[in-house]
Length: 126
Image (cartoon, rainbow, N blue to C red; front, side):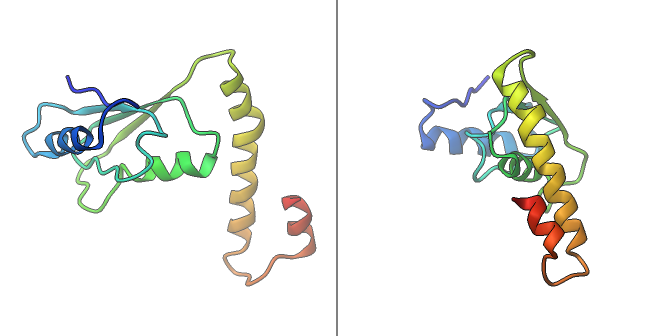
């Protein structure tokens, strides 16, 4: 099976991605890292997308996952994030990334009907 990692040159990455995207491709699962796939990821042929690890930037994780659901997607794509237990990365995700994402979600949900931030919203951002 083709493998994409940090040493894979851009030409081969494009070839592998095109092969994956063909309608009759035998490949139905895509495994990669968020950092390697944060740009130009279109996997409308995938049944499963498996990410090994996460970026330290939560919005980048969300954006990369969103890229698996592109225009033209006709089926559900199952996204699996694999990370190791009892690691620094797990601690950062639990204590920093998830609370930060929740706060941003609350902030922007509250802004749907508002054009500006109120004092309490500004304090919470700081």
